[in-house]
Length: 213
Ligand code: SF4
Image (cartoon, rainbow, N blue to C red; front, top):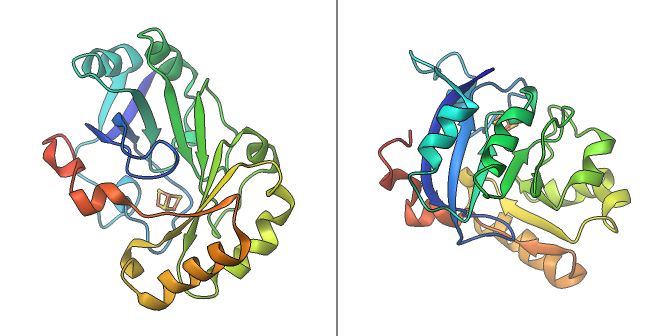
């Protein structure tokens, strides 16, 4: 099997429980969810799709990863779960590296993962079964009403998940009203809710690797 690669690069995880740890990212091509504010539109939007999409076997991908020294590998997208990730995740494990998955949760997850970050999207909500597999939830806060809207969807899962991150959507990441809605929610609810931010973007960490788009 060959996987379509949008980009791959060595950086650090900028979000969630593993924030700040060295990570090799494999961003796969393709996503049918089509969020209006997607920051990885090059993986699916007709106006942004690159001319060449590389296809690589799991063995080829792992050969590239093994030249670096990451703490773990993140398979992301696009929506990586539209692909069967069993072969790729097993090949990475054979190098004794943990494998993390970042997914919208809208599709069945095929593969073996040490950590799953589930970030639900309105355009295609997660499958119920995927909430049980998630180690953390990342809620994208688009405006001041986002948190209460998401509350009605995730309420029944709050006891199952130890970390529920509230992240400002990047185009409003400096909007004081959006940030304050997160701050006030955290102060009034506490755990498992946590305020998040895409810290790697502040550092421009991914851009330091020329393989990053
Ligand atoms: S699910 Fe993720 S990759 Fe897909 S459109 Fe939404 S933000 Fe972009």
